[in-house]
Amino acid sequence: MRTGKALGYVLACKMPVQMHDKTNSKPKPIGFRLLVQPDAGVDPLVAAIDKSRQRVDILIFRFDSRQIEEALIRAVARGVAVQALIAWTNHGGERNLRQLETRLLAGGVTVSRTASDLARYHGKMMLIDRKQLYLLAFNFTALDIDRSRSFGIVTTSPRLVLEAARLFDADCARQPYTPGLKAFLVSPLNARSELAAFLEGAKKDLLIYDPGLCDPQMIRVLEERGRAGVKIRVIGRMKRPSPEIAARPLSTIRLHTRTIIRDGKDAFVGSQSLRALELDGRREVGVIVSNSRVVKGIARVFEDDWKAVKASNDQLSQAPLLGDKLARKVAKAMTRELPSVSEVMEGLASDLSPRSVTLEGVDLEALEETVRAAVKTAVKETIQEAASRPPVPA
Image (cartoon, rainbow, N blue to C red; front, side):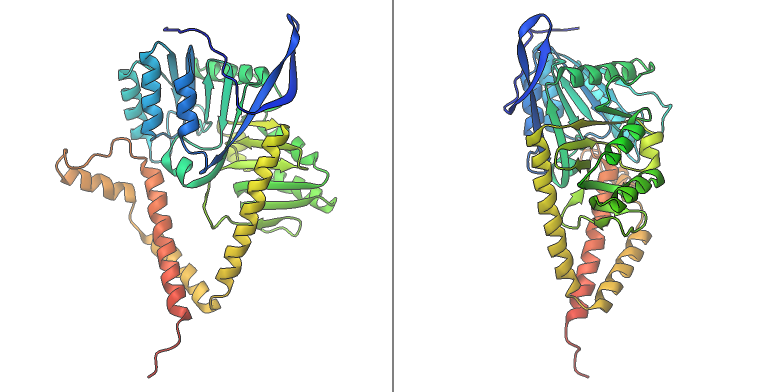
C-alpha cells in the first residue's frame, strides 16, 4: 500500500480536555469540532481528504458527491492509501454502489464490501491518517449535505479514533467486532444499552432530533424521565403521541440526523434512530461527547429549529381548517398513487440515446424522496391557497 509522510492534523477548535501519554510528560490536547449541515457543506470533508498524508478510510452507505470522489482519487495520486468500505446494499441505490466501486477501483482506491449478515450497514464515517475521526449522521450525498439538517463530529480523540479504526478493520475483513468503548456506540452490539443508559441519566432536559422514534423500550424510558420532571422535546416524528414528550416535525428543512442533547452537557450524534431495527438489526455507528462547544452548538441549532417549526406551524394554522385537512388528504393520496420515480427515470434513460442521458452517480432513492416531497408540498400549498380565497359570486 502506498504511504506518505505522517502528518498530524490539528483541529481548529482546541479544547482543554487532556489525554495523558505515559511516554510523554506533556498532555496532548484533544480537538473536537461540530459540523452543522447544510451550513458546513462538503468543503470540510474535501479539505480533510486533501490534507491526508498516509491513509484515508471511508465508510459509505450512500454516495453521489463528485467533489469527495475526486478528492479520494487525488489522494491516491499523491501516494495516500485510500480504502473504501461500501455497503452491500441500500434501498433503491444498489446499482449506484456497484458503479461507485468500479470507479473507485479504477482510480486506485482499495474497495471492500460489507457483509450481508445484517439488514443494512448504515454507518457513515471517515478516518484521516488514523489520527482524526469524522463521525457523521449524514451520507456523502448532495441531498443530505446541502438540503438537510444534520450533524457531524470531528475529533482527534485517540480512544475514539482507535475504536473507529477497530470497527472499520473488522467490518472490512468481515470479522467479529467487540465494542471496547462506551462512548462509541455500535448497533446491534452496545447501542441499545448505552443509549438507554444515556437517556436514563437525564436530570433536567433532553433535546432530541429523530425522524423515527418508535422503540417501545426507549419511549418507556423517556416517559419515565418525563414523569420524573425532565423536560423532553423532540424534533421529528414519534409512533404515538405522549403527554410526557413535546414533539414537532421539522417542516422547515429535511431532517436527516439522530442527535440527543442531555442536560446541556452531553451529546449523542450517530446514524441510529431510537427504533428497534436501527438498534438491533443494522450496523449503525454513533458517539457520545461531552465537549462543551459541540454540545452548545447543537443546542443552539435545536432551539432555532424548534422556534422556526413553531412559527411555521402557527402560520399554517391560520389557513382555513377545511383547506388544511383537504390539502393533506389529497397530497397523501396523490403521492401514494405516483409511479416509482426510479422506474420512470430508468425507462426514459433506456428509450433515449445513451449519450443524451445517464443515470451514473444518481441516487435514485434520494431523487424519489425529493420528487415525492415536492409533489406533496405543491399540492398542499395549491389547495390551501384555493381554500383561503373568497368564494366566487354565483
